[in-house]
Image (cartoon, helix red, strand yellow):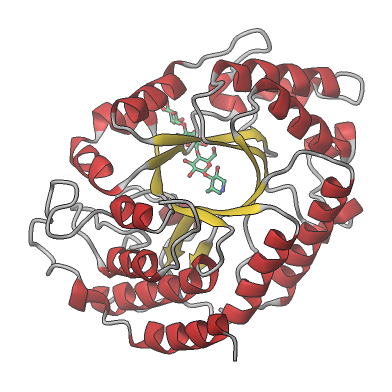
Length: 378
Ligand code: G3I
């Protein structure tokens, strides 16, 4: 049996036994504030293995959420904005670019020795009305190329990555390569990806160019179709020298989903790496809306689920790092998207609403601590 599968089997068994709260400070205790205190922060642990850890953050939190901002520099080395780098925030009118909020985030990151991911240059959501009204086959290439030239050019040499294209897939739409029937596909066909990646490479050659996707985590039919479609798409883009460099696994997980198969996950990451591409876990969180209300039960299940998923993914050297889609349970998008029937707030992230480390924090720490060190990094 290979060392990876032995490790994965061991991880799978220990994941089920993960003590969860046992290694996290008891609720109510004040966690260590200083970076590298008696419990080193998540990014400090990640760096030891040549990885990074970070979180999504809104520019509004920089001033509006002081409690959260005490913990961001303790835990994180990479930031991504939930909305400030999207068309709707950046370009309210065709001839008006508003970089203020995005620049606040990059300036904060620079002051705190953190890197920033750009998210995202092309998506079917968070677009201003004027784009939906003016994007046509005749205007599309110029609109898209100009947007990327201006935006990626504005942030040139300040971003670690760009999610060049976000969520391109929806095989159920029965379009070429399983692509989503989006405004971009309708205007430009599949070559919108070519246009976007080449434009980003020209505007900021230093930013790693990523295609970011969700729904590729579990051994269930619709997700198997997405994984297969993504691999076929990536192989075609690579064959045509479209400069895609990495895949973002959004990893919006569900603690109640039984079809977590570490072998399937590990094989998928290996297949991506086999195409010469890197992997980033870009938006990890774990919904608990289908779990009982009891907090200890939910926290333990969320932690064990995340640990099992991370073990299967982080074991591969192609993986560069992990970001969670928020650091604290306070204000997770999941409460709107998947509200719990009992109305209780979800607990999908490493810190609770009072910024205390939870079993999920311990699971992330353990997954980072047990990940193999990356050759030549860390
Ligand atoms: O900043 C404005 C604020 O000024 C205004 O008062 C307020 C009320 O209108 O809206 C604020 O902007 C909101 C923005 O989040 C910042 O909070 C937008 O309306 C809202 O649409 C936007 O939602 C974000 C959504 O993407 C669409 O951009 C969510 O926060 C964000 O979590 C979500 O993230 C996506 C990823 O990009 C892709 N993967 C899935 C993930 C979850 O849906």
